[in-house]
Length: 533
Ligand code: G3I
Ligand code: 9MR
Ligand code: ZN
Image (cartoon, rainbow, N blue to C red; front, side, top):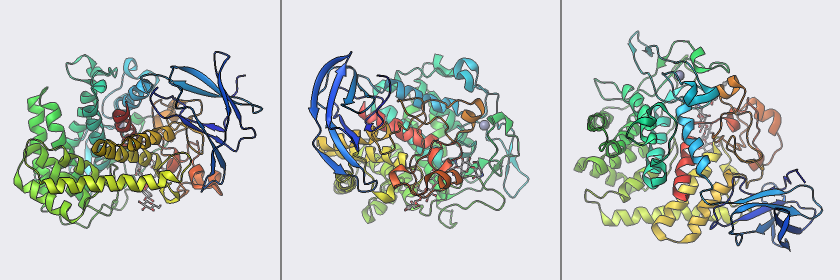
């Protein structure tokens, strides 16, 4: 028997032995199941529990294999139905996934050549290394380096900042990451590879700061998106667009956060980060433009608009307080947080990075009542997610309106909100909910896809990612955007009309609203993995 039974939905990468392991059988034609290993029958039973999916209306039967703890590759079979599900139980199950999802960042590098010994078929010559023109002027500045944002070759500060934050939090979360060899040119240095990789982005971010006034330019891209070519072939003029509050504040936050990571390895670099961070924070006081950012006329690349700057300022204030201890930063944060505790680990809403910074401030005093209030609100956030999980057979924290552009990032992000509640309460239910967000991303979902390229038996082959298109092979280890019921691109409109929200995903190169990849989606996955491994 060689075919896969695609009605069985589970984590296609596998399960750590102690994980909950409930699989979904969608609309089965038989209820008798068998679990086999090396042709031997391990157990059999009859499926009895089911629920009707509120959005797809399918009948979802549950097969609970949590008690199977012995490592191995098993076959789950429904008698009378063709095919099987490869059910994997394995220690350190997500190691390769973690490595490949981190190597993605190296492969996204801009501004230097990526040699074959580090990049295999994704090698490329140096790209986007000419001076960039500041929009509306004839002034040119050098802003080489950093990572290409996504399937496109733009470089955007707010996206970069949250990516760096996720990766540093992941690094802090588990020792396992510091030991990883990412096969990058810096691998021979006496500093963990991930910190070298993140520094590559930070150096570029530093170059995006206006040295005169401390403000940070929002982005650097060509005026419009290029075709499906390798990065060095995009040779149109580079344009740096005007500074924004969101870019300046998230820059302040991440550079502050980074200081402590580089101190043991490079004092000069960490001093540069510190100065840059303080200068950008000070610059915020004089920035009185309207909230958010709008593409200037003639520039049509990614906008990262964001209508609300308050959460970015919130995060910046506390990140600087945690790092440098000045009372002004504390006051700024506490004033905002006492009005409202904010949340978010994404490019648009970043409050949770701030909350976490406050809860982990150790060198300087904090307000214990506020700390408790923040914890209370973080638990409340997790409880709201729990309500959604309770009525969603696959265990994802989504209701219909949550299937938006980049929904997979929100699944990962919600996993981290749930884990935050676990960290505070030690209640295992939150840990299990956090894990179920990972299971969703890795195949336990209404589309039956493992949403990471190169992993699982059904994964995206045609991501909206220019190098993958140019090389004609999907780069491995990339988390795609996932279902978006808004049908926000022509391919989605063509292929997904009439689909229920959780199924609004198509593995088509043209579908940038469901099948693109980005640095901050991958970093959200990395951060979730780091807390779960
Ligand atoms: O937040 C609202 C929500 O309240 C509302 O219910 C829902 C209904 O549509 O929309 C939500 O906003 C969406 C937002 O993403 C959520 O993050 C917007 O509709 C949607 O248009 C927006 O999409 C963003 C997209 O750019 C278009 O602006 C994605 O988040 C963002 O990841 C994506 O970023 C692009 C860059 O611009 C360029 N590089 C590639 C990258 C990934 O596609
Ligand atoms: O490739 C672009 C992708 O990175 C963006 O997320 C997306 C939305 O801004 O736009 C993509 O570019 C498309 C453009 O918007 C419209 N013409 C076709 C481009 C490539 O598919
Ligand atoms: Zn480039």
